[in-house]
Image 1: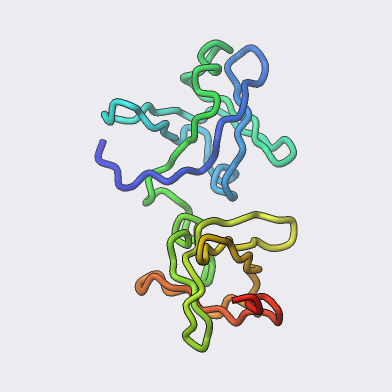
Image 2: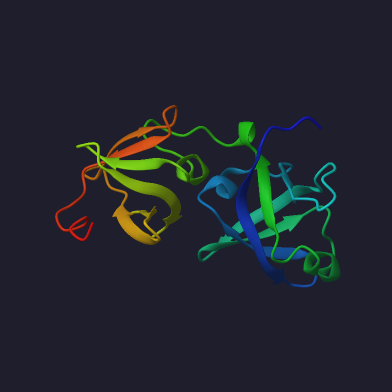
Length: 174
């Protein structure tokens, strides 16, 4: 199989029942859109073809999804994949709308203000109930930037940067 970059879309957190179902913590909404028969992958320690999992069915349970894969038909098999992430090839990710980005596209961007002041590197994304929060590494510490339109003015993936208009008080200690 000739795949591009594999992108994590969730983490298997535990088994569910005795027939090999697993509980998956999804990263975003990608798993919600995957149809039965869709293929997900595990990362192989041997760097050969990644183990493939075929989705049979999936349903929400709170912030998790209960997932049954064709290859996992008993609880012992499911135990072997607990704590592993599941991946999709980058080209199979659903398209995003204008102004929407996957987390993996944002992590690593340089963050600067509209005035050109360098803030740091976007290191992570915290999903909250209302809006995401970007974790920006700055001089050994972190700055938490709300991911809202009033603050995030531009994302330029080609130039590897994000332009922000920080809310009052956010950068006072810099």
